[in-house]
Amino acid sequence: MDCCCCDQNDGDEFLTESLIGDAAIADQITTTISPLNSHFMALSCRDTLRLIFQRLTVADLARASCVCRVWNSVATEEDLVVKAFTAPWRIMELVGRPVSGAFWRDNGIWKFAISHRISRGDSVTSLAVKYSVQVMDIKRLNNMMSDHGIYSRDRLLIPISNPEILANTTCYIEVDKYAKREVAVLYLEGGPKREQPVVSGTQSTLTAHGKRRLIDSLRRSMQVDDGTALYYLAIAEGDPRSALSEFSADLTWERQAGLN
Image (cartoon, rainbow, N blue to C red; front, side):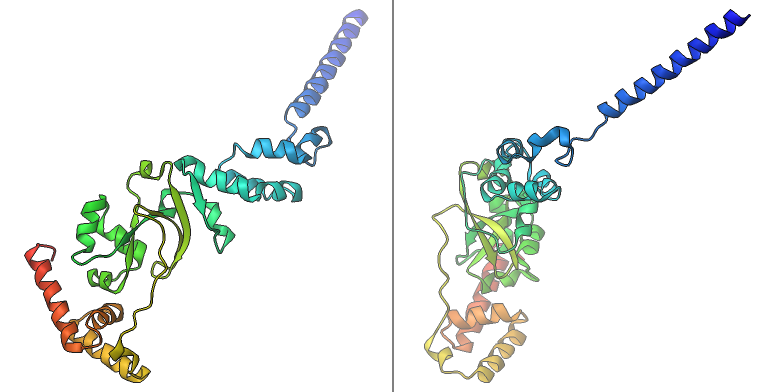
């Protein structure tokens, strides 16, 4: 009996030692790799980090920048961030730098847009058909309350419907004054142009108060926003009657084209 008990005790001791050993191995296996772990000092080497971070997405770079100072200094390097931002869309070059660093945190297709220069006869509906996008998407991107808002602008930003159009192109980071946001803009024809302020002889002689009253009068007559009223006043060289005539002609054309 004594021998049996001794054998049983020896077996219990062996089992206990095995469990302890297995637990120690499990602890080693589940050790988290981090720059704070002395066994992974390579992850504090900037060259090694750069090789790793080159394969990360924009979202992963943002997470990596929160780990420690060393990781942050590497993950926020401009060339790495720009490469991660443009890689999914195969953009050849990104010109300009954003006002806010938050611009880089997301590189969804909604961060890009096509610049369309407004020409006579353009309408939100016709542009939606031309670029295969929804009318509401154009209005939302450009902060437009009505279709007539198009006439107060030199251009509209058009959402990207086909990401392939971005391949091997140059985009320009801009703050659009109407959209009130930073966008990576693609110019299908040429590059960005400097906007020239509209100045006409009659308008320049008006006082600020007189100009305000004139715009308010046109706005009420046309039932449009301030920007549209100002646009027609500009193309009519300050003549309110000519502005109303131009506006009426555009409405007639839209009705004939079936755009209303």
